[in-house]
Length: 265
Image 1: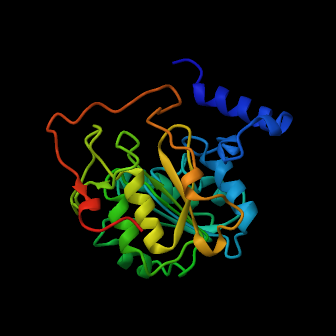
Image 2: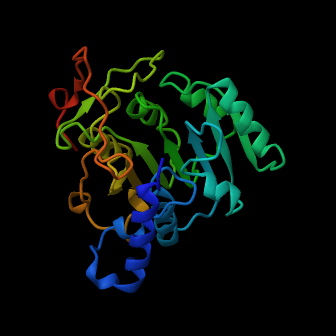
Image 3: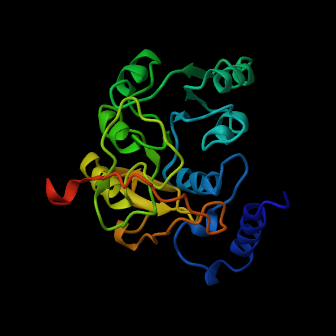
C-alpha cells in the first residue's frame, strides 16, 4: 500500500516547526502532529491544552471505533486522563471495551449518539458539566448534537465539518435520528454553520486542520491566547493530505440554509 503520506508530512512539519519557527505561519498548523489521531489532531490538541490548561483532565469522544485511532486516544493511553468513549457498532465497541477494561478511569459506552439521545447519554455517564475536551465525529448530525449539549461547557470542542461546502455559508444537513453516512459529499455542516453555532454557545474557532476534516473551538472565556476567528486559515477537502474528496451526492439532497433563518452572530 506504500507509506502513508500523512506520516511524511507531519514528521517534516514537526521538525521544521522546531528548526524554523519564525518562517512558518503564526496559526496552529505548525503544531499538527499525528500519534493516534487520524490526522494532525494530537499535536493541535496538545498545543491548545498547553495554552489554556486542563484542570479536570477529562474527555468525551464519540465515533471512537475500536480505540486504535481517535482524538482522545493519546489522552487516555499516554497522558492518563479520565474520560468516556462512545461507539455504536457492536464489534467495534467490544474491541474498545476490551482495550480499556483494565483502566477504570476510562469508560466505554455502546450507544448511538443522536441529537435526541446525546444529553441523556451524558447524564447517564455522569459526564462533568465542564469536561476539558469534547470530540464529535458522527459523519452527519454533528452540528445538531453539539447544539443539543448546550448544558455542558467543554473547554475545547473538536467537531468534524464538511469542507466541500462553502465555508462562508451556513449549511447544515437536516437532523435525522436514523442517519447513516453513505460515503458521499452529503453529510454534516459547513464551517460557517459551525462557527455561528459556536459563537452562539460561547466558543471561538481557533483552527481547521490541513486535511479539511476538523474544526477546533475554544470556549470564549479561555480564548485569549488565540487570534480572532476571522484569521483562522480555511482548508478545502484534502483527505489523507492527498487531495482526496468524497464522491458527489447522486441524489442531490439539499441542506438547511440557516442564514435564511437568522443573521450570523
